Length: 96
Length: 488
Image 1 (cartoon, rainbow over the protein chains, first blue to last red):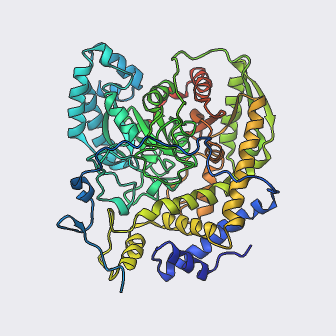
Image 2: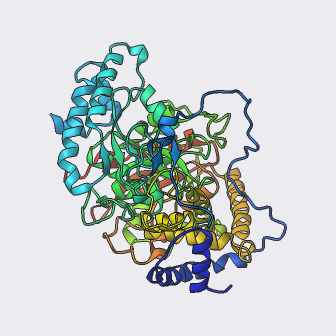
């Protein structure tokens, strides 16, 4: 498996909407290369026909009755919003 | 008098409260002034809530007049790790991202604590978003080890573990994703337990890795730990991974006879790099268990060696998904440098997340990205299935496994911060229990060079009572639970 490159780090940073400085990118590349090398050990294990486990619980598809109830009040919804205008969330332009 | 009160166990303090020899207000005042004394050197707490605590204590004193209204935590001062939501009280997850965040609701476990009459005195310091093993990743001051303040308390529940150890509270709630309750408990000389996955609701726990995270107790002895677990355990429909059937109950007397208990000791946990003093304390602990009548058999669990890699692929992948919500729009840090929405997201996250959080986001993103998903994430999940199967076969022959909790005692502040892999190795003994969702407890097992060593006991899913019972028997046959750090 290829060890992670600076371009890989930049690419993943873009996918995860995470700003990294050039200095951070280099440190990240070096740290993660060491970590990923260690994980090569997993490739030695035969996992043919082994089902992946996403969870350590056997609970599946938990449902509840559709009972109407109050949702969080506007006061609480807006309480932690960085920029509020009237009752709206004020954000930066998404398009253009 | 106050210093005697501070170092009691919760169940001893409860005795005084029930006999009205002390009131909850007096107990809380003693704890609050101890906190003032201790905090400048230990920094266990991000937020202290004296007024709310004294108001709650007055209410609990009223409850204490009617025995029928009382439980094991009524009137008892508690600390809650700061990744557990407390309505109206700052909850930061140890991060600049949430340094001003005030939750609009209580976590399920907090609701249970309040109903039980427990007194929340403050929020415990932690590694940012619970990512770390030393509490050095807190965006606020790192917590120091109560036994030696040049050393780390462990992490990520370093604050809660230190607070229990110093006497800043009687019991605490931590969270454990790869060992974050057990490892700091071992390094601080207290009891810490991660319950079976699904026994305690995660509703209101700021998510790190949803298939691994669990909330659990940290306490000065096993009985207090069991009492806290009784209060917080049980089904919660607001957490879809909460077990619909799991229950927890435990009766207080420790068995002095462990005849018939079959303990398996996997040799893979005695890793290279395990300190001699830790190994020695561990071997003495096994002798104590044998003297109580248990049989101890050395065996091999070969997949143990892969658990670290499995964890450090799955946990960052889940973390990357869970931390996607911090976008600068709805709550949390919002960059003032952004021209458009995309910049707002990137810059808010870049400015407010610490180095370890960023590292895990990138690692998780890499493991999940097209081209690498099969080799990393899917592979890790398959090996996870094999690890669960290996444990399941083990538990057909044995009742519990017993290992050291941590390969080393507390280490110097700054000594591992620059080498992520060496920091990750701190969790090598604790991670397997999270991968398989198993109940696991750490109890004090002696000292190495005047620093505490922890013993870990792990059981099969839903065997929380069994794990606690064996821990209780070991504890009562040894003096370690009676020690507290001399500095306080």
